Length: 549
Ligand code: GLC
Ligand code: CA
Image (cartoon, rainbow, N blue to C red):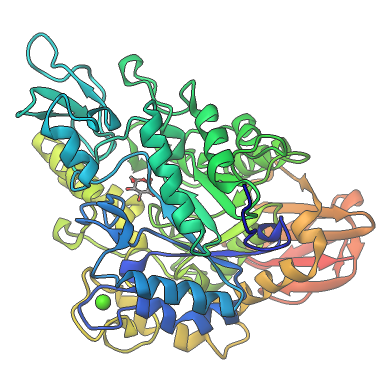
């Protein structure tokens, strides 16, 4: 089979930064309050100027939007609120002119219950498509087949009264799980992927991909026994020979699994999103019960991945996305050291070994939403868990505190383009409230400012493209037990890059380990340029810099 490679350089994504767009909240072109594809096209020059190599586009397919598009009703068409297939083709072409690829979100663990496959599957037990989904008889008492819970609250099984069986939905009832054991279903998915790849896209971000090998009867969800077989088959049938980026979302992956997914001879994925640096701060009750930040724990999670994937496999580097709180609010200090901490976080994230991702608004230091009342939220996960908590007699105030810290809508408030009404996102009424701080935190205010968070991101992204030590060098961590300092070195042949960051709001002394001493060119900094790393250094709060030698 002959497939046209997306680009000649098979490893183009090792020197690129990828920008994630959550279309609903990015830019609204027609004043209906919802971001759309023409809105994205209007911002491509901004993204080209930032220097990114590709856009990961959260889902834009036809969908009833119960989970903002992560519930797909037609994989081969676009939701009318986002535009048309012709708009999508225009976006692919206009991005390509700026050397920006489009990475589509691939949600194939489940569909929407509005998908025609599900309509056929539920029409009768004899339907040829019945087996595209996961059906089980009721338990002897008529209840669900087992105790599996949905990630969005409640049982993971819903009764289809007409046919008298339960179907599995690990997310909302409107998101029935697909049955990957069925070879016809797999073939349909591969055909759909090839249909998109042939339109010239740069790859896929694969939603909760480590769930597709599940065995619900044994309560095995992530990393089921056939997961790697499916991914190898998918690679062979769709990705092989195309030089596209394939990144899997894998909430349960360990560093050892990271190599299995992304190793040189695995023939599965380019890399995975791992979440150990996120979930290490979830408490007993999960995300609604966050633990305080601890730099040693954070570094251990990241350094373990760096070590495990040092000679084979590839890391993705991210500190925020559409499911997580804003990075500067979660890991930095959005109150007293907003600019310094946003730029410090970016410095360490972008200078590790791997492919960095920037979530829309992160590059201007957007912060958490600041919501205090449940009616400000739109997210199905937050709303369902709130109801469940209240129904079980839990404390709504405590839940709201958890949601304010970790709820997904923190990252979904509209992109802050200007200080004007609705942050320049829409001329209508936005589908979710705009953050009040858009008056000070916005693109327009930072665009010409060399010291801005935005300028810092631009510098970091450009450095990766011009210095192989950043894209390809070895990673050597230092001071792993230090509670305030995040320090590492990158090394490629005779080139060294030393990265130093004070992860605290206090001035901090840094006694430079003798084997780290260096002098050279300060290639990025957020406080004062430093060309020597030696002796005892006095670092300002959240000071970060990198020296190239
Ligand atoms: C992934 C997505 C999330 C979505 C879920 C179900 O975790 O990132 O937004 O709700 O999968 O598709
Ligand atoms: Ca719109």
